[in-house]
Length: 509
Ligand code: FAD
Image 1 (cartoon, rainbow, N blue to C red):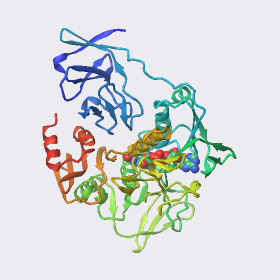
Image 2 (tube, rainbow, N blue to C red; image 1 turned 180 degrees about the vertical axis):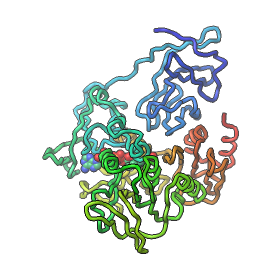
Image 3 (tube, rainbow, N blue to C red; image 1 turned 120 degrees about the horizontal axis):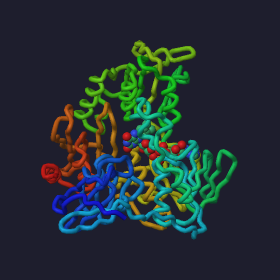
Image 4 (cartoon, helix red, strand yellow; image 1 turned 90 degrees about the horizontal axis):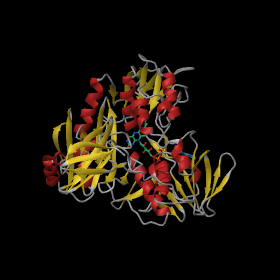
């Protein structure tokens, strides 16, 4: 144990964290009242500087992807982090703050004292978060985590941002959990496809012939990209992007200078346009709507993101529908219904996903093939669902939302309820999207609004926009306004009048 003098007590502000360093290690000092605490300085999720987060309602919210931790003990409250913050012992002597360079050890593995078997199908955002949460909550029984993709679950959100941009090689995408974690926590990974479910007998059938009995199961199989149904759609250079393998296939085909046609204007389509442009391709987006993301972000922000793409050389076309992919052995062009022909070396289809629920055909399914869950993410006795396959009640309305953090939140709720809890989703949905080096943050899930107001200019970030309905904030969109969005992530959990929100933003540290 070695104590290091890191700051004067009076240097630590009351309403925001202070980052200090011991050697190269970043440490966060948090002062609330007279209480001072020291935690790791970077978010365990993606390394964000936590001193730039927001302190509110006893929680610290990460500035980048809105993970939340209890100020009192650093305990994990909300993903996308999957771990609590490491705590460092400290002393205050003569007005100086001294912090130990050794973090307290508090990781533990629950003893194997439970005869039950819990099965999780899908080791993506939701599945991996659920497996972690079961152990965090003290479950000592067997945890089986099944996925048809080889290897541990990984962060698929980087595929369209950094992997197909050539920045992160597919094999270097970090695992959500490393092998030591699975071993220490006795989480058994099975690489197989689940082919059917018999929920009356609590049995799952796997593609390798195995049949597994469970006491409780979580279905978290995510989305399957919608495919084009056009002549030529089966040519080898027509891609979708959902998995590491898809990204590898795109990278094996793409060469700088080639023409890529992206069909669709979804978040994945537009992020891929940005990434492939960065990789050096000529990119045309064949869109359905004149302004991308107008439905989610409103016209102004949609136009600003469109202008960013155009300024970086993306050609965005909202007229004409693809009728054929031309080429004999390889893609040569995309033919449109207005007779035009767009030369193409590769085509990336980004027209949305369908819930991957084919193996669960015996369960009642919604029109979009998702599974309807109650507020506690329960499908039926002994069975839960989370993530992209789940239609859940949000403010009383059935809703299916495809966001990384939400999938993990739902999974943590399901895990608690599999253990007999009674947890419900009470948060504000959040997602982020990345275009040409700019990260756009969105809070809420607004279908319509009666006012929208900006601080800053969406065409020249930083900016933050608030969407109001009946005087209350129902959504917020921003770029480079991380602390304010972190603050709103917590504040918007309660009804927040628009005027109050602007006051909080004005008064923010
Ligand atoms: P997934 O993470 O897809 O996990 C499902 C897992 O189930 C997969 O590993 C799959 O192999 C496995 N599986 C499926 N069927 C079976 C079966 N029958 N048997 C065994 N295993 C099976 N969201 C954001 O909020 N921000 C972003 O920036 C963002 N970017 C994205 C970029 C890309 C390229 C993609 C594809 C998605 C992005 N998303 C983003 C959406 C986000 O990734 C999803 O909402 C989230 O992954 C959903 O989690 P999930 O656990 O439901 O599904």
